[in-house]
Image (cartoon, rainbow, N blue to C red; front, side):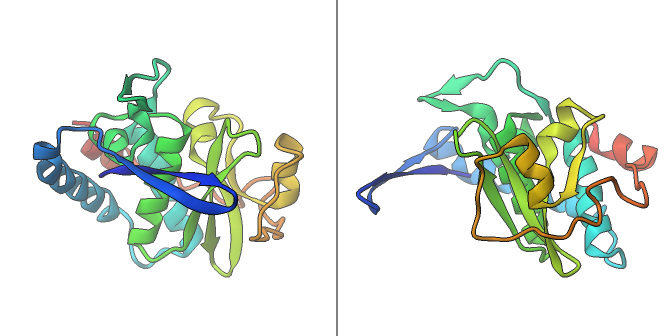
Length: 196
């Protein structure tokens, strides 16, 4: 899928620049491959789970599908691993790749999600509306620092990491700031299915 950047000066949109991370003639094939991959992942999430379980399973599946890209390969000034297509098709991601892909996956199962960017612009993650509350979820932390899992965290918890961060959406439920009452790890069967 194409990525975009909004150049913002004087609080109005001056220009929208669309960058493709593949030749334009390959775009339809790439979009179809991306949609197939998304559908493959979504099929593994059972409808009877609550939203928190669904979001946790999608996080685990995404982490199992793409490793962090420490090389930051660029094409036309864009870091390749920042796109959802690269994350799922080439299995490489940086924080924006994880956040954009995770938001896409959540929206595919009707869970509202947004991408959040730190005030200094060096990191991004998601907030998602799960079972009646907004929560912070950082797939990158799960992928890189499995012992520091930022899943279903409140604003108060996140501000310990990013003190200057603010948002219009309030994530004030602290129920899971000390961890979840359950663990739903990816099953060996699902993990094997995704690794091709």
